[in-house]
Image (cartoon, rainbow, N blue to C red; front, side):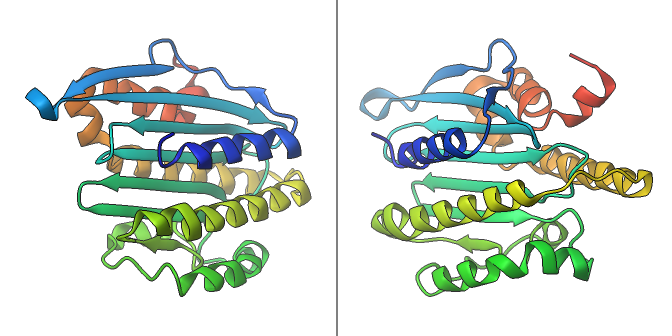
Length: 248
């Protein structure tokens, strides 16, 4: 059992329970990928496994799970709504490296500067955020250019103890996901063309930023090479642009 497997198992079970969950196509060659890193007795196998689902209001629910021994564990779990809903994105980046744990958990807003949007989607989760702040303090420096893509309930923390990840981080993950699924249940179809255009542009802005700045790019390139990595990022992890233009 790896550190983030329980997170993934929980998420899939809850999604199956609360949504009409269907498979989302994972391009050939990306379902799983192995590499050997290190030398001699420090050699480790790294396994990256991809998961993809969709649901009536959610265009893509996807996860990338990287297992590379005690010093490398990653779960990137993101939910992208369909373009005719104003839902935020659900994003969980759970990273364990030799130096410790990096945890980022949020419902990332389409319109961060819109007070009405914040009232609708951020205010209800601020109490959850505040509950965990005492155990999961702010993780420090964060790129200024990334700030527009995160909400005031952004949980960004760097716990030193694995036990904190297994307890407080796991509980926060569960609470954020449950709250997000409540938003999904209540979400109403958006039909006016101005709002639909705004949603599409906001989603593309976010995806372009994430694809360009993906922190896993260096890691994947080291393991699997640049060609596989770029195709994985643009063809699966952040595939909206490809889907809209019909490029396979």
